[in-house]
Image 1 (tube, rainbow, N blue to C red):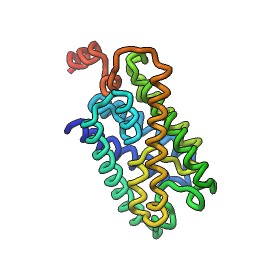
Image 2 (cartoon, rainbow, N blue to C red; image 1 turned 135 degrees about the horizontal axis):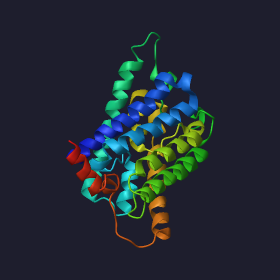
Image 3 (cartoon, rainbow, N blue to C red; image 1 turned 60 degrees about the vertical axis):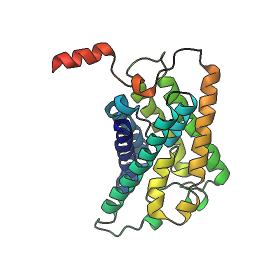
Length: 249
């Protein structure tokens, strides 16, 4: 329960911080600023809730880790429910803020940081381009998570590597789809936009999950056999560091 609550809180921060930067400050900070906002929220949450849950914050990441046997089925199911709820609550809070500003705000018109293709793509990219982008970019994200949390990876740097990867992913993906690579992040805002956002939501669920499966398969092929380390343990302080912190209290 505590780990699922951590996923709820972490996903709330990811969606509120990332989508909030686009909705409330996008005109001022641009694509680069929004990309950094998503990356920085992941870094922050990796070191905040990572030691508790592994800071998946994303059903596609959880699915990839499930396929890589870094999380069990029951835990993964609890995480996905918590992630979806966290994203929806974050979108609700953001909706309350955005619609009570000095100027009228209509999510259906402004987009509310929702994902889309065709007429709803920032760059006018069609469904094929959107699907391929989401598939490949999600695979990149999940591959980074699997590698950064591997038992052979340097201890303590997983959050930084994943956050930087997510920043890069957004720099590439925002013009195409507004960047999802995360079904929960897509579902939250889409519920408040409705219409076409809901109709196109299938792509931002299917493509990320397929990308996660692709990453898990690729990682299995290139990784040398070794002990399996969960994402939660990979993002904890070492036993020596934990002991030092206890002594410092």
